[in-house]
Length: 222
Image 1 (tube, rainbow, N blue to C red):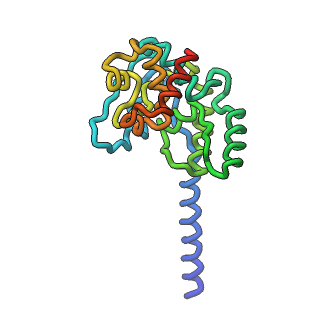
Image 2 (image 1 turned 45 degrees about the horizontal axis):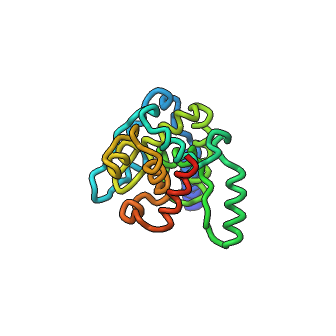
């Protein structure tokens, strides 16, 4: 009798563990519904939902045509200069990043495309773990399959963080220059594109020599 009870408990435990792993795999690889993003702006994002900073969250959606062409071009130049050529992943950039990381023996350079960054912002987190990166990979491919490049860029420019509680191009233009996203000039666009890797840091420290050189480099290419 005891052996039978032990066998049933062991079977129940195996079933529980199996169900747990099935749920974990589903949670890892199940992809979000994206088709509606062709027509509607996302109500919120994973990053916005997790914002807990001291300042009031600011965001205002504007269509791509009301975002300065200088900002559109500057962000592509700064974040993903082959955006209109790749299918969600820039394999050349990945190869170069791996070579640099191996040389420096640390994660010194990233290779995320705008599409990957949008996938992360909309649905995931900033955690650097393999499962998160795998899910990001598949979401990025789905975004590329279901949305146009301009739509991907439009959503990205409206949801990306540009400072402590500042999300999207319209809020960023107001926060830094007291203007609209449509009115941004070359220098202003180059500045906003330059601070994207570390927006909260550069929101506080805007005059460093490295940032100024980066702004000048991007502005010269506009």
